Image (cartoon, rainbow, N blue to C red; front, side, top):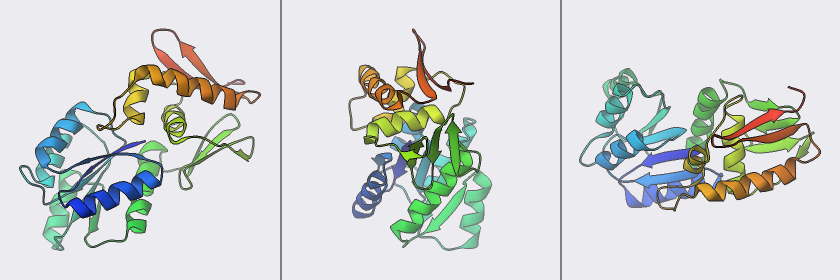
Length: 223
């Protein structure tokens, strides 16, 4: 899953980015509101983390523009402002959660997981396709009750597929979840990750089906 982090404080932004990357997410770090607005209008994210006090365009305006485009992407606001009126203003604009600075990285990670659980898994802790089970809290896949060992990019592809049951995802859509803004997105590389995942799913009741010219679908064989 791909997250947009917008924080203009260099040290804090990099610390949060590394913590979230360490937890296995793809994280784009931007430092001003204009860049954030452009990214949210053109890229696909599972979650946005917005600092309120951004240069060029503050976090409230970035959020307002996002909601104005009809996007329901979950948004976590970071703020040094402790006033109730600011929190109420952000929530009225459509923020899903607030976290006041300073904060512990462990709390931020917990809130990110909670927001993704509600938005991606409909509030459930786990999602399954046949005997493939994804635990969002642990960010772990198991197959037939046994842990499935995946690289970070294999994990990102499988997360995207299991989060959209019954939907075909194109290579371009999958690449958007795997590669960050600072990386060269390669739709052809998705074929490699899908091939590796198929090898790891062999012999199970789950497969990745190719729809030529359209993309890939995760399905249970007994479905």
